[in-house]
Image 1 (cartoon, rainbow, N blue to C red):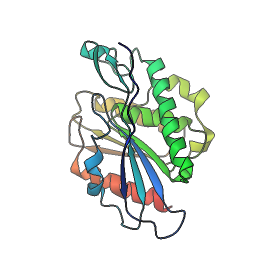
Image 2 (tube, one colour):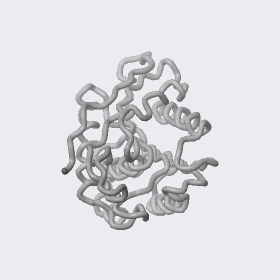
Image 3 (tube, rainbow, N blue to C red):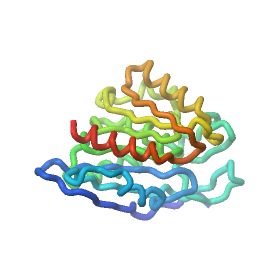
Image 4 (tube, one colour):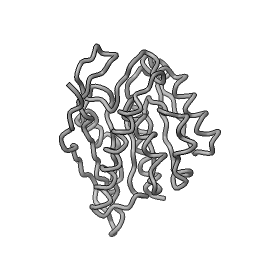
Length: 229
């Protein structure tokens, strides 16, 4: 059985804009085997200012067979073929999911939210896809959040990177005890980006492949900061 298309995203609206044009959107992608409900409950924990109106969009990845899990069908943005995350990458799956992300961003723009007030982020596979798609997006985004993830298809970035997002704020967080995507993968990605002139706010936390309470607070502060610019 091949890939199955996902249902509509989970939507969480919070806050209220004090002036017209201040609304924002945050497209937040889950990790391997989870779904759009995975981070739904995190929204109130971000403690965003009440006058900051943010529409959180939590999409579901397509259902597809995942090689590393014995070909089991699960929600995944792309296939994982081996233990080394960046080895034997599923370029077809990555690029297919990038098109889905572009559609999600386009849908928010159609609702009247400009690209510079749209944040793109995610955890693990979702963070990898956010970085992949965000750096290639034709218009400047408000920010890119990368949680416990890495940059897929790095060799293709030079030719495909969008000049519009060269200065987009990037929040990159990683656990120092991550056994699934070791810290070195995050550090390699950070170094790769910084060497190419990207602005990376790099944070580490004493955790495995998970989300830390301090990380949640930092995400909330970062979200408010980049949307207040």
